[in-house]
Amino acid sequence: MTPAGDATSAAVPAPQPPSARPALDDTPLHRHLQWLLDVVGRRRGIVDTAEIDEHWDAGSAHGPVTIKLLLDELRGWGTTSSSAYVDDIEVDDPTFLRAHCIVGDRRWLVTLSLEPSSMKIDFLQKKPATRPSR
Image (cartoon, rainbow, N blue to C red; front, side, top):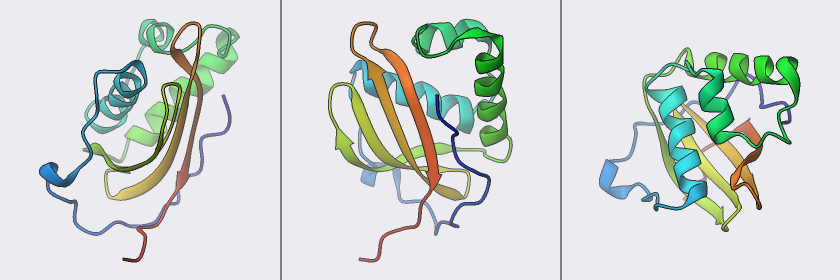
């Protein structure tokens, strides 16, 4: 796990309608991203260690310190949000995804990868992102 970014991110204009958002498929990577967005957007970052075990590769999250940091990061990210969704997807491979996500009123570049043998998360990074000029 890497540091997942700071609390400052670019403000976002009004959200796009759900029909204009990218659809998430029923793939392991998209299911993990949907779980992450549910945790930070709907559940305000509240997650327990059993869920971490279900979604996070055991080889990537060693010991109670790492798990505590992950739990704290998710709670911190979700504290100020009431919604979360994918705005656009830049890279979408079977085990690697880079997407812009709207969490609350902020836009983030989220990078997520899966460990190929377990198909569980082994890397998560979020960075503040701005809306591209069109």
